[in-house]
Image 1 (tube, rainbow, N blue to C red):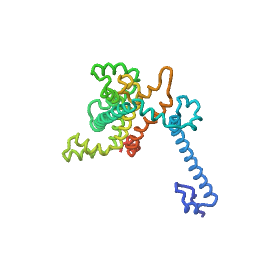
Image 2: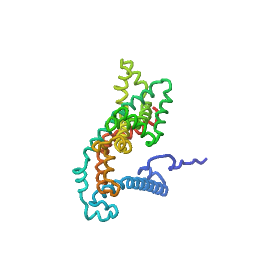
Image 3: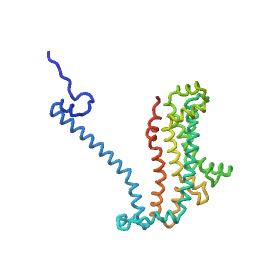
Image 4: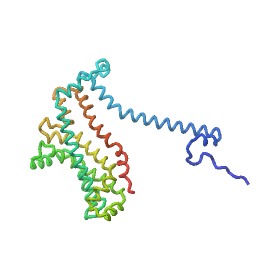
Length: 306
């Protein structure tokens, strides 16, 4: 009676020297070549993706070094006349620092207020069962369906009645109306992954519902809060339409609106625009660096319920 020897190629064993040694010579070489080809293909895809992602940034930095506004038409000539004069002009002869101050005030205000409201909303829907709690979340999602052009007039009227036109607070509230619905959905999904037994333990220790939320739940939800903060910051930092409409004083312009000052009816100073755009990216990059440790965990954890 003959016995059949299992094929050494079955299973998902890692390719180690010991495994290769136990395989027949041709099979070992074929498996090694397949593994090498797969590694080269994956690295090729990653390198291509990195080049595609980094090329626009590198091109913007390159154009910002050209001294003439029309250098973008003949980029090859920039190599021979690179200069930092564009950055010096933007920093010394424009309202860049006023724009930066306004952007930081509005963006950080939107981040703090938006995350606070979204976190309490998401936690309430995740833990409490009040009438209409499911419909409430869908209503929040429904508010994202309206285009900016439709919302502009009613929002302007509301802010005018509240005397909040041309104020940082008014713009922060407008941005929160955009950031809070998405962040509430995001944080609700993240709070669902935190065991309910933690809330029960907090009540046993005598904590109030708000005390349980603040002292037990929020520390565990740092990755989700980081994602919500990053989204709120980016939403406020790069928005143009609302800031252009509701901010009338040019010293209160945000950076995204101030960037438009380099474009007139008959002229466009693209070299200064490129330099300003590079400077604008610095605060966003710094904020991303501060939250990046929790960013990936927060993006993935909200998709499953533990």
